[in-house]
Length: 288
Ligand code: HMN
Image (tube, rainbow, N blue to C red; front, side, top):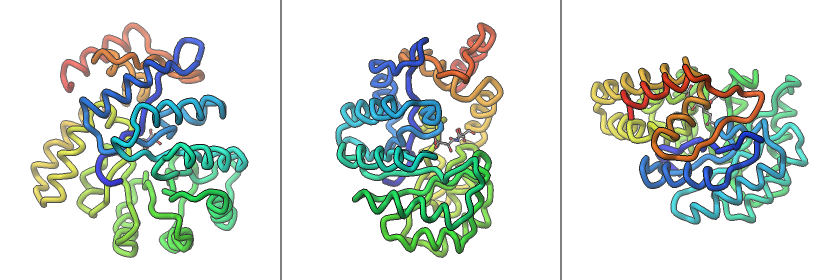
């Protein structure tokens, strides 16, 4: 489960329903064209927190059916409703997902004991491996090195998706846990994370830009930092254009320019205006 892993986008129709053909198209593009090393399903990029339980299960099922065992699959099952997290963890484990992942519980400012209890409780119910999903900017949950260490005391917790610009903590984590899987979560900071010897990266922009990301990771691993930096610069030009125009909407519309039926986002995420779609064409011409 190393390398460049796409945080999979999902295709929705104008009624907010999963477009199965579109989702399969997105998967095929990731596997056949971008050639990513794995898929992270129902993360932020999959609009997970806007979905019903039935839709989450539908997406997990379609993805496994399309991918089979071609690349590793990680299922994000985190939910504020712990019963839902457990139900989804069991569901994807039965489907054959290689690992589960759960975002740190958010909104209520849970303390660390509550967060630890959350992970351990989910894992009591399921025979699978867990990747912690840490994204402090969105959850408000900042964990220290010692707190990560306490979580890792549970042998089923095998790694972390580290989505934060804290390279000191990332280096300390890498040093202290050489055998855990450490993934970088901010695509625009892939190179500095790669220099710290991460195992891989999980990100939204890899649905389109995964080839450049793979080059950055490989070049950094080989010590070719300046070559990697040139590709990170091009990548960041791409990412900043995407962010300026609306992240998930733009990524989906970029897929549409490549013949992928990527659909639109679920409400309350907005849809692109005609002007926004024009900007997408410019981005596609420049970077794809
Ligand atoms: C996921 O859960 O879908 C992604 O792994 C999250 C990932 O860290 C992305 N973060 C968010 O979308 C909030 C990044 O890929 C991010 O989109 C990218 O670095 C652009 O900022």
